[in-house]
Amino acid sequence: MYIPRMSQSTPCACTTLRKAARAVTRFYDAAIERAGMTTTQFAVLRAAERAGTVTMSRVADDLVMDRTSLYRTIAPLLREGWLRCAPSDDDARAKCLVITPLGRSRIARAAKEWDAAQARVVAHIGRRRWGRLSASLLEIAEQVRTWTPEEIA
Image (cartoon, rainbow, N blue to C red; front, top):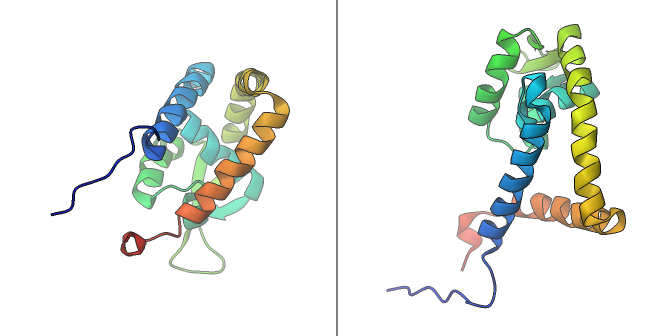
């Protein structure tokens, strides 16, 4: 029988990262709620805005989301007319997201509050420290997303 040897002196990486992510997400969600969207929806809209036309698979991969979560996130954005689906020019099986003019106006509506939230978080952490932390977190995300359960031994 396996008996876990969890260190009492080392906090759980998963729990610690999730706690920080939830706290920051709540802060940003509260900041942009008047724009009628969540931070996840804002991120999807921004991804579509930056790309012009982008496959759903690419958005899911870029945001490290499973496709089911992405579909739940975009459903209200499609219903409200902030995004539209289009067939991919490269792959008939793929669906693309395209931001609409209404979606662009919603981003603009949320941007001031988003920028203020971002400025407060970065100021609290410190610009240089945030630069190092964000680089580390992105590196961790890229590395961990390739790991498989079979590798744990």
